[in-house]
Image (cartoon, rainbow, N blue to C red; front, side, top):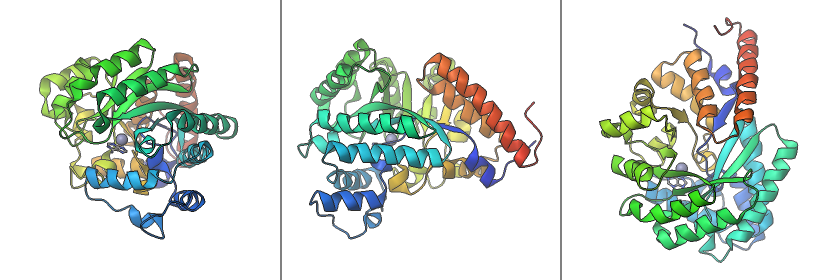
Length: 348
Ligand code: ADE
Ligand code: ZN
């Protein structure tokens, strides 16, 4: 059995499928943009805002942060910087959420938001060693009509290589998740891939609704999945990916005291296609490079197991098949190069 050092795991090539654009924003950029846009923040240093003890509190702070995002260029900048930071964390491929519900409430039209993100994405594709695509998340508390409107907007983007899917985020408690089935139907009709935050601080039944009623092909968080044995068996059998965010569940949703007690290990042992993700690396000041060694230590994973988690991210992604094949090949080369550098035997 081969175990890797912290430094080695940080440098593994990785895939990230659950990460929010707005929550990835650097505190220094929020400060710049708030100043530029005349938005008053309740603190001098935005990092001071990044203190939360539950999901609702976190989302209130998220809203304050989002007030600083006004122009298309603001969105271009945060998109580019988020991908620059991801590349530095070893992320080679990312599918990233953006959540227009947080800023359209302040009068920023979704078309302007997307114009900026699109520009940032294209710029990052030119400059950075990371491939990225976007998923539009609607805001659950804004209701089913907002969800349909967002599905229609996402469907209207002609370049399906840039905006590939629709998801849903924000709170779970008190939300009728089945009411979003019509919005997911619209998304499906446009050929958008479908995912949903479910079972984060809400019950496993929300995961079931996401899959059975809304046609979701992937589940974000799924923290409560193992509560339902039959559902778990179906998720395993259909290889429905679950984008797990262990540290986020400790520090944002506060549903588990530490990563060692997170069900991620039990999910993997049960055969769930569960991956590792950071969720909101900017606001958590904890990215995927931090998450890999944290999880390896918490569950005593070998290097092989960590490499497999990385490869499972490729399977779980919505990248085209030829791109997946190319990624598998390049990851294998990088895995072996790192093993050589750290004086470890090559993979079997
Ligand atoms: N938006 C950003 N992060 C989120 C999370 N962890 N849960 C729900 N909505 C979110
Ligand atoms: Zn999330």
